[in-house]
Image (cartoon, rainbow, N blue to C red; front, side):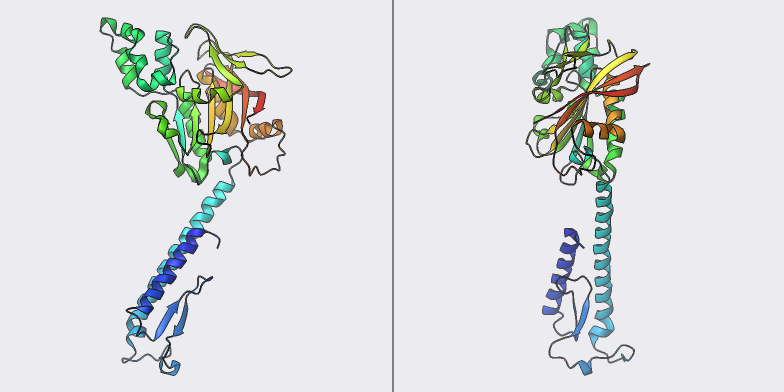
Length: 359
């Protein structure tokens, strides 16, 4: 057995037996031990006791020593119970390890036993407020709640409107975010207990330390994504908020690539939308961040669907020049731009358009 938890339980049992027979059980005629490096109990005659005087199984009479008639059965029960517990922990660990082994890259970098994985879904109300007021917004304003109190927010309140109060106080996200979150939690398999889902609205800066994170949505609806934009080649851009097409700007186009990829005018339209999938280090450099961001909801949902498909993941791996036989024991950071064909507000197909490694 290689599991450390098994060794710990066995060592604890070994010490407890040693303490008993060195203390209150020092007068017992038989001693129960678990030798170092082994897990099976061993029974031996106590030092100073003539083995011939120890009753043989099947010949224990009414005058048999107290240990063999009363204490021994209970000791055996305790030993067997502890051993069963040790084996249960071991086989649970084996089952979990087997499930973890079934995870494929890049999920091996975002789901692991050493970190919690926090899935952060977009704040639909933040995106709605930006469109209604024409305000660009920023993470700083979002955290300080300044957006809701500025002149544009006050204008919405005129005439007794309760809209701003509802938007600022309630928590809403999109169907695309829910679909992606459900898919990702399912992919985590036995590591689902390591995964939590939170709204962007409930996050704080200190929550971004030392764990793995999945951010769903673009900076227009999930302002936390803006923390990582300067590390990406494909960056979301828009002209007049709510009155112009959003696009991904290709900061360093390669031959055959466009400098700008524009998406749908509005969510729910038919046509092509774009999304990026990015995997990069977390802020404290001891975990991973996965970002799924679409220009519209359809693009965000398409990014989750794309990544959930094994053939698409292999396509990404090949595009990065990594043999499929590579088990990916080292971290690899990348970003991919995908195009999704959408019909009636739902993505129907996806295509890998461009890819970059992140240093």
